[in-house]
Amino acid sequence: MIRADDLIIRPAIPGDHKSILNLYAQPDYNGASLDASAGEVVFAAMATYPHFVPYVAELEGDIVASFCLMVFANPAHMGMPIALIENVVVHEAYQGIGVGKALMDHAGQTASEMGAYKLILATGLKRTRAHQFYEDLGFERYGYSYGLPLRELPQ
Image 1 (cartoon, rainbow, N blue to C red):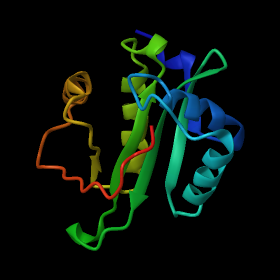
Image 2: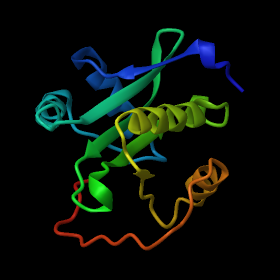
Image 3: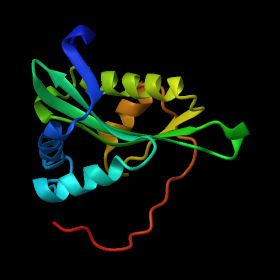
Image 4: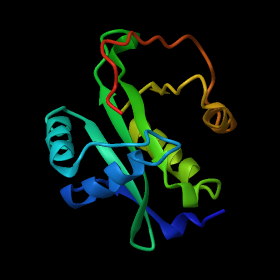
């Protein structure tokens, strides 16, 4: 297990974007990612949302993990915001040592500080290791998540 003091979790800055895209290209994640130029366009678009933030985790100066957190207004549940975690990825060399847990702790704390009443995420049906990881952290399966493919993803 890593020591929490060794890991720095912070909002990403433009100089981090290439490292984030490289994490997405890992074979056990997407296997490919946008090129740097296209990635910059997407990160710039994310910055226009009220709170849709990519975060990175640094260990000894290297970016070893990332996630995106969106906290958004909600007219139901007495107006309490909802927090959505997306694109959770840990470099394969740093999996199983507490980096992912630290990311989720940070996401939960940030969402709570922003008044969110729940933290949600979705993961693919075949990612059984991820399912166990989230359940071990206290996430509960509480419903169904559906997707409607609108186009095929590029390889």
